[in-house]
Length: 547
Image 1 (tube, rainbow, N blue to C red):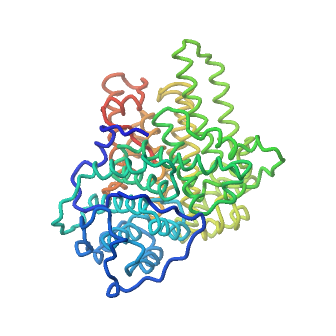
Image 2: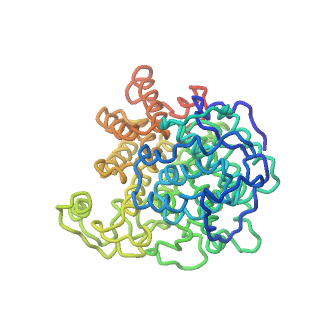
Image 3: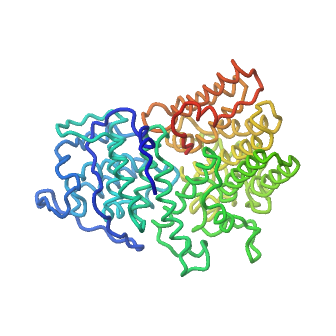
């Protein structure tokens, strides 16, 4: 893998105040089986062991980290999870170099809870911490991410040691990973941490290079000759491997929207997520094996993930046909409508038949009852609502109970899933009809996205933050495809509510939407097409990852 000298220039806009470890040695191979955490020793018992020393030597020391203040400055998070995390890493872990301990603690307590917003942190935190303990590349990348977070949040750190610029640290991390003949699980996790670092810093940077590292590992795993196919691999692999595979696939799918390239794993998505390709008859009402579900990882049903991937593939086909001057519009429309009917229509050939756009089962309550269901959660005074479709084992994961009693994480997934389904329709009809905001199908799809977004309870910070920061793709594409001033103001208001924190790509998404509106309103006129990807490229900056 080659490294472009210019691909790392946008990783950070300002010097970081925190020192960060640089990987200089081969990471240890991570076992596929999770290992129990070692009993930590007290700090008084700990010698500084050369074997555990940072590859940066004495670049930083524990004394500069003000870990006691982290809880005051940390972003919104689930208090119970935060307490569990803090108690598990309070003392020094002999598996972690002494000088990295502060950043690892900051990562586990402050960064991980906001890194994967729709995942159950009680499930993923153990194997992520195990990877940090066992893999130097995963640990180094987590420390870079933690340092970036501290810097963006403006946390005060007294540092008298010179710190390399962040571009250097990211470049060195990638060169270390790219130089390996075999990518292991810790390396793949390091790649995902690096993508998160770039997302936390605005979403522009060398994310494609790091995503390629994780993708290389995913390909190795899914092509394991011991198993007949990717489904069997996911059923039998460890929790950590499964999480890395699913997260990488999700990044790959959403990256294809920005890059307009065919997703790397399109053929695998078809094998895993297209029910019509199965060699056996499957109950369409069954959500499918939990090991294959994307809902617990990214809050999106498998059929919608596949729909977005297929739409990107269709966009690439259309572009190739236009270039060759042989585009058949009827064929384009036929393929697009097939995607919509098959994957985006509840009850479609490869869509869970029991789920409707509002997340309610077939034969379930009316729209009025659905409104009561939402109110039962959002308004404690509303009547409680029960329906067997939300019982344990539903498509939204274990423990998804009634609307009133469902765990918040399941509610987040329901809201997110509906927004992604509607956003995929917007994306599809821009491919079929062009970027015309007055196109009836685009108007209807954008309106559907807005309606789904209005159901997000802004007064519930945990829910709204998790949902809105997970669906920036939908907000961005809908915002770029509307001429309605009311809809524009509403979308900008949603993004404004998420700018209280200095991390994330919200500011870049706002800037892109405003540039699209300015170009359409002042240059082309209302209703004229403006390709938001062209606007993004006109800035001569690296592509924006909409995750």
